[in-house]
Length: 168
Image 1 (spheres, one colour):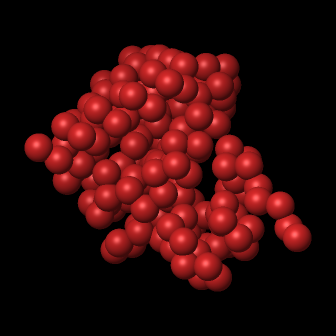
Image 2 (cartoon, helix red, strand yellow):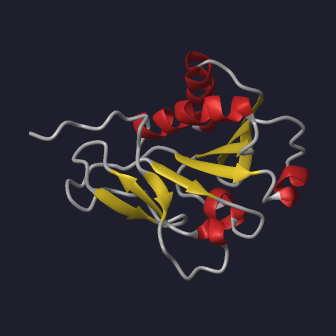
Image 3 (cartoon, one colour):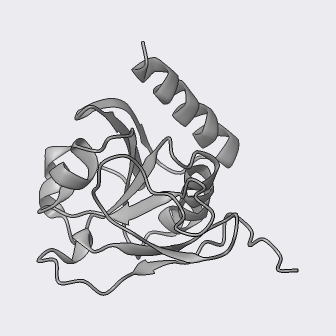
């Protein structure tokens, strides 16, 4: 019997694509339920489901200056935005926590990762002064924002409050 993969150790990588913006490429996500690998588009109506077991998949994508509006602001589900950089230690500490939150809330949120070094216009537009900076966007509007790394429990609570507040 195959063991289920730990949620924080998802297979997440870019799939081959002919999309102009590299950030808009689909990602390959291993289903936490059955273990099958699925191609998940950066932008789509609804939310992704596993092609094998039909369970909701975590929606984890990259976005940049060119495709942010399509990927994040027009998302059919609330988008949790992670402004990060490869050289940032706190960003690397927060990333697995965010991946786990995306798994726990599969079908209810989209985790959008924005590399500030590759998306300088977004960093300016959203006045990102420190990384990691996290935002929740619902219906094209920022409903919550947090700068700096925080423990998993704090991030989970912050996200839950942001999502609850966006439904009012």
